[in-house]
Structures are given as structure tokens and as C-alpha cells.
Image 1 (tube, protein in one colour):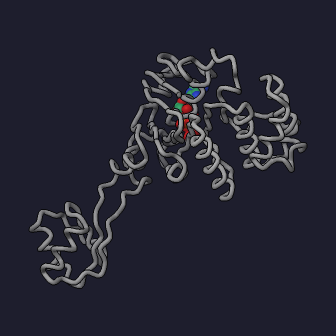
Image 2 (cartoon, rainbow, N blue to C red):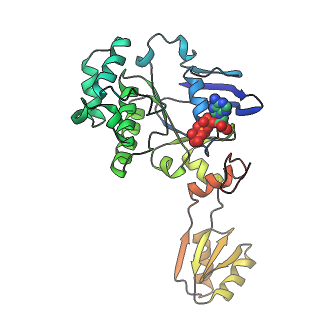
Image 3 (cartoon, protein in one colour):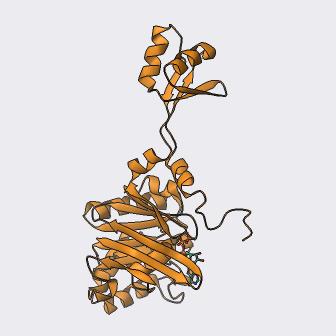
Length: 302
Ligand SMILES: Nc1ncnc2c1ncn2[C@@H]1O[C@H](COP(=O)(O)OP(=O)(O)OP(=O)(O)O)[C@@H](O)[C@H]1O
């Protein structure tokens, strides 16, 4: 379990992380989501003891990271996939880490196979594509078989097959009862990966809830209706308290369920060609919640 309590990081006058409090529980993939510059990397670095908080605390299973003797056996992390000596081979990089953490040499072959790099294990990392570096970073995180894992933007540079693989990997790790925190600035990446979300904007907490709860608090749900008698149906539904907006050839109805709209249309013998409840889109919910809390906007000249 990761517990973040009142965590704050200031760089001079700028506040990168502002009084963040949240908990990441085992058995789930928790998505750590926010626009560019929201403070995700800074938070993860503080959880891992690489940056010192200005105030507040971050603990892993009740202790600051630095007090865990087991190192890679306790926490695995992918922070910056470029952070590997380019002249080293993938295997040499992992062997050095295994040795330094008292891990058996066989773990190197195991994780290389798990991430699909066994065929290039002896090649210099300098020649790796971004996707291959990400896979090596993931292998590094898995090396100590740790119960707590943090991944900062792990999907960057992966091809669609790689994205599918990494989703399955994270879900598998959570199913084994591990604590898995995965950051991204794209909701679409989290939609099929995370079951819980911690959302931040400009260093502050915006939401900490399940994916379903998050979707529900975003865009209001409505029902799309198509009928050859829009004026008549609009009058009937409005009398029942619904709000009806024409949208192209269709109507968007809020305030009544699809079932009730169907009943009313049937009673008045109004023909319907379509009756479809909108499901609130996660992307729309994310955009709505982070609007105004984005550090860098297109066209913004600050
Ligand atoms: N060493 C530093 N010195 C000064 N400012 C910093 C430093 N590190 C980060 N920041 C600032 O802190 C804010 C948060 O940055 P951070 O990298 O944590 O965001 P992020 O959510 O990970 O963004 P991205 O999705 O772009 O990686 C940004 O405004 C950034 O410019």
C-alpha cells in the first residue's frame, strides 16, 4: 500500500505538488492521471525517495521508501526509460542491478522473457527503440518480484501490441495482490487498464475513485432519440419534466430514462426510430474535470 499525506513540493515560487493526499491499495491497478505538468512524476519521485518533499509524507507499507532494506524486492519502478547506460547490453544492465540487490541471476532471464526482450538481451541499449527501452524499464521494475510497483508513463513508445501486452501485465500483477500505480496524461490509456483513478491537476487532487464513479461524475448522461415526429415528442417529454435538445436529426433528452421515454412514446402512438442512452465518456469527464487546471494549453503563451 502507498500512502501519500499532505505531500507538497515547491521549486522556488512554483508549487509542483500541492497538499496531495491519497492511498493506493493492493489488488488494483490505480491510474495516476493528469495533464502535462500536473505533478505526476514529481509525486512518484517523492514516493520513491528521489525528491525530498517540501512538506507532507509518502510511505510504502507504512515506511518511507528509504527505510525499506529490500530495495528492488520491495518496490519496483519505471521512471525514465532513457536512464540506462547506452553502451551496456540489456542483460548486463539487469545483471548489475540483480547483483546490487542480492537477486539470483536467473531473474534476469526470467524478466527478459516476460517483457519479450530475450532475443536482444546482448544488444547495446543505445540501439534500442523507445518501445524496447520501455520494455527494459518494465523488466527492471519486475526484477525483484516486488509487491509494490510504480510505472511513470509506461505506454509511451509502445506499439498497439505492446500496449495490449502491458495492460494485461498490469492487470495480472494486481490480480496477484500487488499494489500497482501507473501514470498517464491520457485517459484513453487508463480506460482499459486501471480500475481506480487518482486524478490531479496543477499539483492538486481532483478525484480519487473507481473508474465507474469517475465516469458518472463527468458528462451528464442523456438519451438520444430519433423520431419522424420530433415536435410532438418534444411536447410530450417536456410536459413530463424532461429537457429536450435537437441535435441534427436526433433529439437529446435529459431528465427521463430511456424506458420512460419509450413508454410515453408508445402511449401517444409516436413512432421511434432510435432510443439510445448515452454512456458518459471517461475522456469527456477527464476534460471537464481538468479544464482550467492544465499547466500547458495550446496557444498559451505564459
Ligand atoms: N527540478 C525542477 N525544478 C523546477 N520545476 C520543476 C522541477 N521538476 C518539475 N518541475 C515543475 O513541476 C511541475 C510538475 O512537473 P511533473 O514533471 O511532476 O509533471 P507531470 O504530471 O509528470 O507532467 P508530464 O505528464 O508532462 O510528465 C511542472 O510545472 C514542472 O515544470
